Length: 123
Image (cartoon, rainbow, N blue to C red; front, side, top):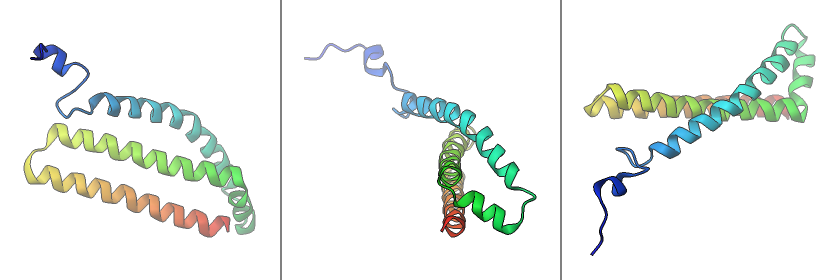
């Protein structure tokens, strides 16, 4: 016979049994984005105003291309998880499911489009 109290069974778990992992993912991605986004904005800002060839040359280098892909993927995953958390807090029923599907689809479409454009530029 197991002697677990209600508190012991619930310890470390939220209502969805994944709250701690979600919290730490959001914290880690926020810290990573806090360093990556200003660097990306500096690179992107320095490319603005150049000729087409200069912009293509900037994003054809490995560091700007990898940083752009990283900011795009991690930023959209951070957006998706945050938006889903907001939707779960404020909506119920089939509208909730529809909004979660829409946000997920939107984030993956943005990532796919951005990575496709980046590959076309970098190669």
